Structure formats: structure tokens, C-alpha cells
Length: 256
Image (cartoon, rainbow, N blue to C red):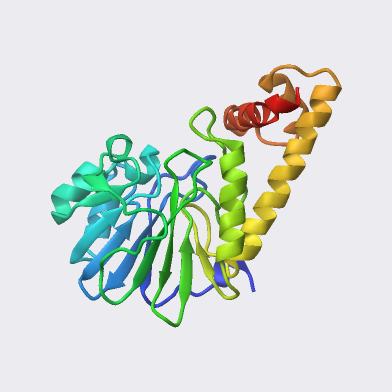
């Protein structure tokens, strides 16, 4: 089964923002979850009026939540609040423009009809969270930018941290059960959330070994390492790759 052919759980709708690019892939995925109290919107998205209006039109909306503070996920929070009249929760309300703090990791949001559990998954950013959502029959992992539907994510040093990111991937691998659908912040739906998290961890460890090899060969700066290990990658993403390499260097610094 191809990733594009995966069927969405019946309790969610996808509204994809019109902000495609090298870092956002096809655009930011805003997830609209149907509960007994109205919709819970995960990542209202960027400040694009047409997108926010399309999300609000799927209401009534009961609550908004944010996976992390990057503007492609929460830049439209203020306008979303104006359109829906609801509160928005985030791990970092100040950075995200949200109203209040999400419950502690492992807690469940107080909405009827769906179990929506918060998981702290820092690494991409310090405030990154994921959500496990289930109606008792179908379970989905809404992973924000911690795990994407295509490609790999950036560890946004210095806010992001590679050690924390590897721990978060381990948490997702341990938590996700067979049959859990991955509902990412960018890219297509994937049928096996645990398998994707496992591949992400394998890839990140392989890149870490490449950084070690580049250092042993004489590279000293993040830019020099990017030029070696990302030589086959489009240069438009090199600045982001440099942030991830900086995170790798910080992670490896005790080894120096």
C-alpha cells in the first residue's frame, strides 16, 4: 500500500495549507478531529486567511492545540481564535501565541468521544509535542514535525536537541502499537507509525556516524560537514541541515 493510499480514520479531516516549500513539503497539515463537543483542531497553521477559513468552516470548533511554536503550524493562531472563539493550548503558549499550557505529558484532553493523549516529544524543538488519538477502534499518532510523512525532519539547534530527539523517537517506537496510523505535520499519511519512527532513528544514527567520520577526516565546522555528508541534497535545505549538524556536534561534544 502506498502512503498516498492510506485511508484516514473516520474521526479526522485533513486541511492542508497552501504553503508548500522545501521545509513544509506539500504544505502544513492541519488536523480536524471530530469529538462529541465539536472539533479539536491540531495546528491551525500559518496566517493564511483561506486556510484558516476552511478550517473554521468544518466546525463547530471546541479547542485548538499546537504541536510546536514554528509559524507554519501556529502563525495563524490569533486569526483562528477570532474565527472560532476557542482557546488554544500549547507546551509553550508564549512562543506559540496560545492561551494556556497543554496538560502534562501522558495526560488526556478533556473532550468527549475521543481519547486524545499528550506526549512530550522534544528534539525538533524544545516544545514539540505529539498526540495519540483513538476512538477505541482506530488509533492515530499526530506527530507534528517530530516525524514527517516524507523525508526527514530538522533538529533546530540550539532550541532543538539531538539527545532529546533520539529519546522522543524511542518513546514513539515504544508507544505506537501495530496498526497505528501516522498523521504527520507535513507529508502524506503513513500506515505504520512505529515503523516510521524506527526508520527515523536509524537514519539519524547513520547521519551521526557520518558526522564522526567527517570530523575524523578533518572537517571542523558545521558548514564543512554539511558540504561533505549532504553533498547529494538540494542546497536549498543546507541551512536546515547545518542546524541539525550543529545539534549533532553538541551531542558529540562529550566525546571530543
